[in-house]
Image (cartoon, rainbow, N blue to C red):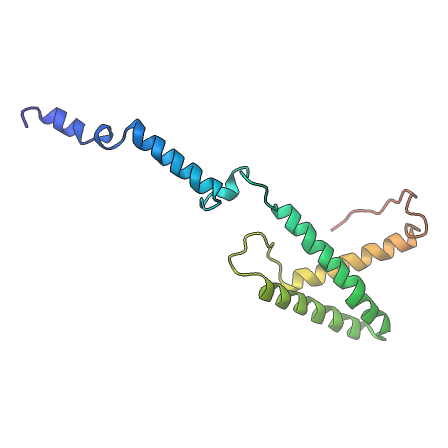
Length: 152
């Protein structure tokens, strides 16, 4: 009351914050971080071993390649026209998108978002690479050094 400057200063952070509260906050954050509930866990090095986005992307790529090899390519080899091939590729891309939507929640931050057009382009690029590797003799001699031009 007698010293208004001191009262104003005492309403500052000195009265409400102290080392004890900071320590409690830090330990609370540490507890949340260890229990993997801390909202910014993805920004820091993981405390416990978890699959990374790269691991998930690799797994999805392997599943995609397997589906291409076992489902799409055999179907494409039976088709007679470019239009049929294009339609089959579009249908496959659509099915992959639908499966990804059903298998992963909207809150799964580990799934790289990709639409049917992106999947179609990945199919086309995969088939082109496979054709180039075949023409270069890679599948006949995997030890042979192959130079495939990298482009778009």
